[in-house]
Length: 448
Image (tube, rainbow, N blue to C red):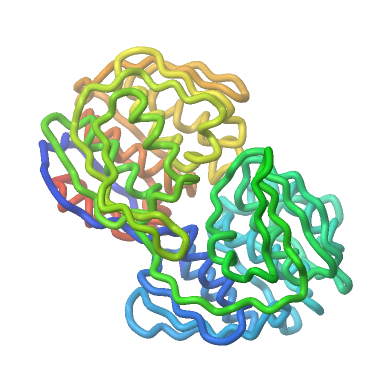
């Protein structure tokens, strides 16, 4: 069930802090753990998973499709997998993906090549507004049908392919589309080949990689993923690291808050997820990674951050794929850094939970930060840190967790009187966000 609606009011700047924190577990890996565990053979264990609204929607959907999932204790689960093609849909079954585009795309990938699936699919108000055309076109190549024809937004009806055959796919910047093709390919006849044009997040491959008869990855000029369909998947035991996207908001607050430092423990530092940190380090940000180890094919470690002066941000299109979720908070950092910051290759931000380009411009404008944008680029004319207690920020109900979190940071750093509506959407990715902010000294009011 979605969290109950509430707004947040902020009217005080944050004071300096020196703290050590843990952040919420990685959402991408948590969702994949349940979906892939459901189609493995035998029992898989997922520990330290994120218990957010998006992950709860994932567990609920898997259970409705006949998968037994048992919560052992908070954040720890047993997943009783029955193999690829084992999910079943009762007559008139309806799946609700909530706010989660990841769940929607990946589970549709699994179901498109699972025999005898006919299911109604939908999301919340925000997800139902997002185009699924690229996903539908891809799954149609496997033989799946979506009704009504030529409709590309939820709600829809999915009818799976009876004789799915592997495809060849040239992947772009979307890791979710790549993952949906991987998962559809697992239960297709023959082989499925994916050629990566740009290296996107690889959590799906990392969870599958030990299945050497199923998945092969070659690196020539480009990364090529080859899947052999109709093979068995081995079960796994995973311990999910902290989410680097959630950590980005605390990193931003620390960098820009005078005389502050922060240690964020046990964060996932997969090379396909740290574009945000690379962009900032290139501009003299005091960010270090320490205690690095590799577990379940994923790098993890601690992030050490100190407040400092940074140069205006320059992010070419190559950075987009490895820092997609962090662009709203990067726009805030840009606005509070003196000089002109430029972000290119960002057109896909228009089809997120909201149009993140125009919505972030509206928020920046409310405190007097100017920007200009085209379809694929934005320039932000940063003012540096300034006092904005005479300004008001209002964030309407957008159903976009990253916009809410970014506006929250802007308010704490400028003192602008801020109201953020429907803040509960943050719980889709970061249920402990407010509690952790409070531990750093943030003052805010919660209004139901």
